Structures are given as C-alpha cells and as structure tokens.
Image 1 (tube, rainbow, N blue to C red):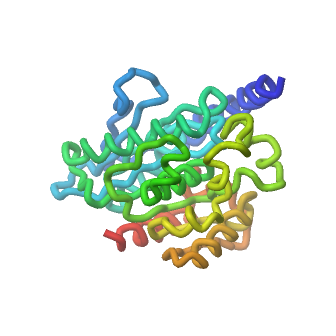
Image 2 (cartoon, rainbow, N blue to C red):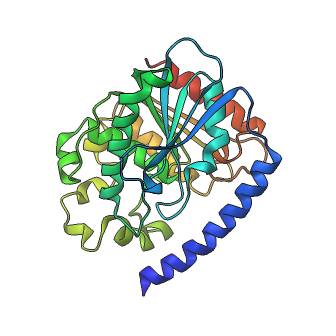
Image 3 (cartoon, rainbow, N blue to C red):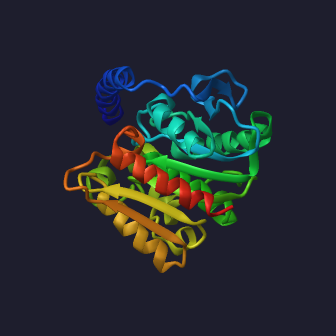
Length: 297
C-alpha cells in the first residue's frame, strides 16, 4: 500500500520534472565548446540505469582532472540529463566530467545503489585517460540525494567496516575532494524525510541492520574519514539546515570544510547551482566549488 502510494506520487513528480527540463533546455542552449558523449554503458548490462554521459572541452590537449557527478532526486526520481548544463559548466572550469545514472528506490535499496555507483566510479577511472582525463585527480560532486551518495561512497572508501556493513567493495581510485550541493545528508531525522524514506531506502527492519549506526551521518566513524568538502546551500533551500548542521559536524571532526551559504537578498531554490547553472549566483558558486576541488590535487 505504502509503496504504491510512493510510486504514484513519484510518477507525478517525474512528469513535472520532464516538463521543467524541456522548458529549461529550450531556453538555455548547450555550449558549443563542450563535447558530449552520451549513454556509455559502465556496467555492461545494457540497462539505462547503468549509463553515463561524458563531458569534455572540445579542444584540450592536456589531461584533465576528473569530476564525477551524481544527480539528486530523493533516491526516488531524477536522471543524469537534469544536470547536463551544470556538467557542461563544470567542464568549462577545467574538468573532464562524467555524470552517472543509477537505479532508483523502491526498485532497489540504497545498498544496490552503492554497489552500482562503485562499479561506475571504478569504470570512469579505468577509461578516463582514453577521454583525456587524469584518474589520479578524481573528485565527486552531487546535489541533494546525490550529495548523500557522494558522502557515503567517499566514507566507505576510507572505512572498511562501513563498506562491509553495506556489503559494498571500496572504491579503488582515491577521491580527492567532494562538492556537496544542498545535501540530503540526513535520512532518519524526525522530519518529513525521516518519516517516509528509511524503509524504502534501507529496507524494512533497517534499525536491526549492520549499517544502522551509519544512517546517522554525524557518526564520527563516517564524518571523520571524509576528504575535503565544499558545501553549497542558500536562503530558500528547504534543506539549508542540513548543510549548515553537517558542515559543523565535519569541522568538529577535523575535516577541511567550506560552507558556501548564499544569501543574495532573494530566495534561491533547492540545488540552485546544479539546476540553474545559468544564473549568476550559480555561476559564482560553481566557480568557487571548482577552485576548491582543484586546490586538492
């Protein structure tokens, strides 16, 4: 009953997202100086949920640092194409950018998502040189649920017990730094997200699962083993308090952290810098994030 309700509501949100994406793309042309290779199969099974898009400058002779982008959508919806203009913009700031698709809840649980994205990230590192990338300089960035995924994947790379609790292999290439936009870091708070999401994301009986201690991102075992983090939020972001809280937790745990909390005198939407990269506020935020990431090579 509950899953049916979730699927019905998600279907409505997907239609709204598609309408917005068509309108947004028609109003904001794709840059001519960026080369886009679509739908590279990173898992080898031919499924649409295991494809990635690759963005690179049209003319670049030197190996570029590699930025892997993971889109948001509350684990329930979203797709890589939503971030195409954001990825193109980050490409313009000096990255080879790969945007990974992944399977969605409730078709799978979060542990399957972790597993698939781990394969995807390893695949990007293995083929990056073919596309002009330097796999020794690899970064993750994501918005909303994508920021959660970046955070947890990076933490598991540096914490074997956490990876084992999730039944996930650790990512092979070293992640140098994270860009976290409007992160949905907290999934089990006593709020609207924590009320309906945990059973779908972690599975029923999740409180008895070996991964339960890590569902709280403030767990020092998780928060204390992350690479440098750049967090973005703004006035108007309905998860602004998540970024503010998590930034403090990271700093308390000795993680190099920068929080960009934009107050431009107006409200900006959730994940504004990924969804609306054409705006001045987003361009400034993305330029700052790029500079932070590139400073950690």
